[in-house]
Image (cartoon, rainbow, N blue to C red):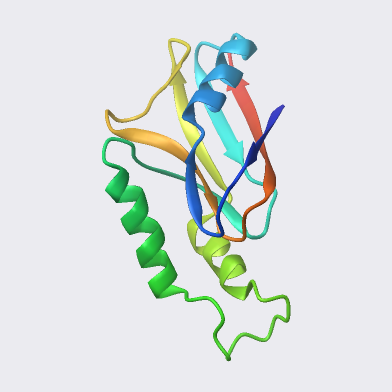
Length: 132
């Protein structure tokens, strides 16, 4: 398992981690298999989305905030980050990506993103690669 850390800068944010995941793959020497990217945090997530137009990430964050707004009186969790826990569960804490010829099999416009919902924070991301 390879672990790397990232620093987020705002409460809700997508951070492109494709380069770090690719580096972990290269260091492993695995040519064919599956890579799992896992986030061990209850107020964050991992997702795959478009990397070409930054408005996609902004729209994603804005609309998720509309769907699950912060600071609602109906939240019972007392830390003020109930929306962050809900967002993490909706998006999910891991992604699996196929590895072929030593590279990540992603679509032309796809990148792997760390989704922060309770930042700014320093976060850990775990990468496990299975294959040959």
